[in-house]
Image (cartoon, rainbow, N blue to C red):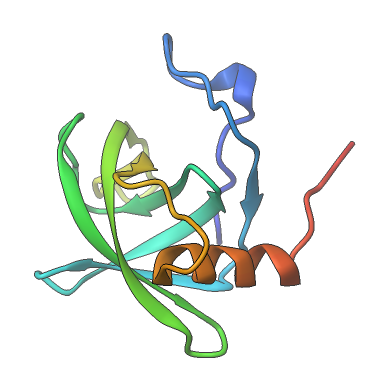
Length: 128
């Protein structure tokens, strides 16, 4: 089951998302590189993305993530940890919800920007 990320008003104290994100519902696969550790990508937007994983990431640290779309389009994007919170699981295993900001803001013409543009073009924002 895919956990939804918390709404903007439920973000950790002091952390407020400045740009909307799309829930990707399994449309984007994530992997931390070099360690080849899979992460579940929950949402993505023009400024960053949210993941769920068994790894705790230190706030302020920067990591490389390979993001792959359902059609196989893939790129490695550096991202900086904004928050990483432990969640309670039924089986007692460690699970962390982590928010990341792209280290370099993706732009037109670069691989990350093209991946995000492609993702945004095939998905839509859920506007209440």
